[in-house]
Length: 494
Image (tube, rainbow, N blue to C red; front, top):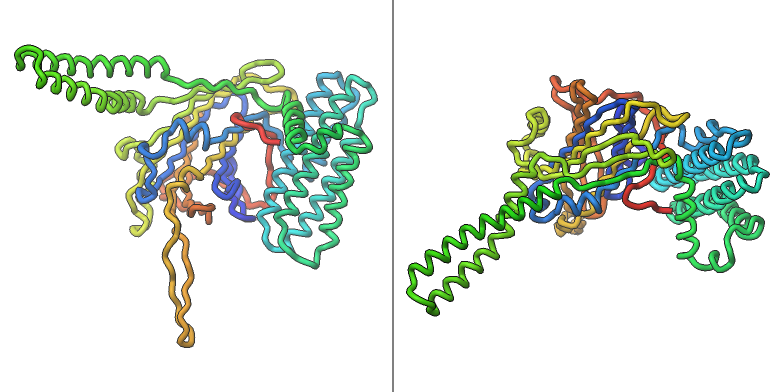
C-alpha cells in the first residue's frame, strides 16, 4: 500500500494510499476484465471527536466528502513516462486520432497536476527549485513534441487546437500556482525567472500567435475558466468512464414510512377511543387529552420511522453505480456502495482482532464509520490499448475536523529564571482498517494511524498487523509517482 505523507512514499501491489490535500486521503487500485473485488474501510473515530449518526449524515457525507474517480488505466503518467510513451497521432482514422489525442492530452494534464502537487509539498528551497527547474524543462519538451504532430487536415486540426489551447493554459496555471507556494530564496532567482518566462511565452503563444481566445475571454477570469473547463471535458471523451449512480431502497423507504405512520396511527386511534370512553361527552378535558395524544404522535412519528429504517437498512448497500464506455456505451463495470455507522457487535472478528493490538493508552471508545464498494468488472476486453480500469476514492476529513476542538493549552518552560509559554494544538488519532478481497480469495488487511488536527493531517503511519492476519503485498519503495487519467464523478475542475 502506498503511503504518502510529504515526500515519503511506500508502494503496494494492489492498493495505494496517500495524503492528497491537507485534510484528505486518497485510495487507488486497478482492476482487470472479469475481476470481482470488495474493498472495505473502517474509520475508528474517537468518541471525543463527537462524530456519529446524530452529527454526521451518511448520505450527505457521501455526496460532499467522498469523491470517486474511475477510468481506463494506462501506466506511465509521470511526466518523463508520458514523454517516452507518446505515440504519433498521424496516419490514423479520425476516431483513432481523437482517441489518442485525448489520451495524450489527458495524460499530460494529470501528470503535471500530480507533479505540481508533489512539488508544492517541498518546503526546502534546495529541493524545491531544482525540481521546479526539471519540471519546467519537461513541460517545454512535451509541448514541443505535442505540437510537432499538428495535423494539416482542417477536420482534424480543430480537435488539436482545443487540446493545445487547454494544455498551454493548464501548464501555465500549474507553474504559476507552484511558484505562488515556493519557499523564499534569493539563490534561485534564475529558476524563478525561467519559469515566469515560460508562462509568459505560453500566454503569448495562445493569445497572440494562435489567437485561441478572444480578447473579451482573456480579460474575464470567469470566461476563461469556464472555457477551459469545457475543453477539459472534451479531451476526456473516450478516456474516462461515464457513471450512472442510483440510490437503492427508495421504494423500501416509502414502504417503511407508510408502515411507521400506520403503526403510530394505530396506537393513537386506540388511545383516542380509550379517552372517549373514559370521558363522557365533548369536554375541555377530552380536548386537552386529544391534543396531548396528537402532540406525542408528532414527536415520536419521525423517531420511530427513522429507527425502523435504520434497522431494516443495516448492512444493505446504499447506492449502485454503472460504469460505461463513453464511446461505445458498453457497460464496463457495476458497483454497489455501502456507507454506515456500525454497531460494535456487527464489526467483523478479524477487524476487531486487529484493533485489539493497540497499546492500552490508545484503546479509547470509538465510533466506527464503514465504507464498502463491491465491483464486478465485465468479462470482456476493454478498448484497444487498455488492460485495466482504475478507481480512485478521495475521503475528505473536513466534515470530521469541523467537530474538533481548537487547542487552548499552553506548555510552560523555565530558562535562567525566565518563564515562557508555547501554545499547543489539540490532536486526534483516527484508526483506519482497510480490507481487500478479490473474488473468492482470502481477504487482505492493512491498518493505519491517521493523526490530525483541525487544519491538516499531521501524519499517516502504517501499523503492524497480528502475525496470523494476511497483510497487503508490499512492493519495493520508490519515490516515482505513477498516476493515471481520472475524472471526478461529482465535479470536474479545470
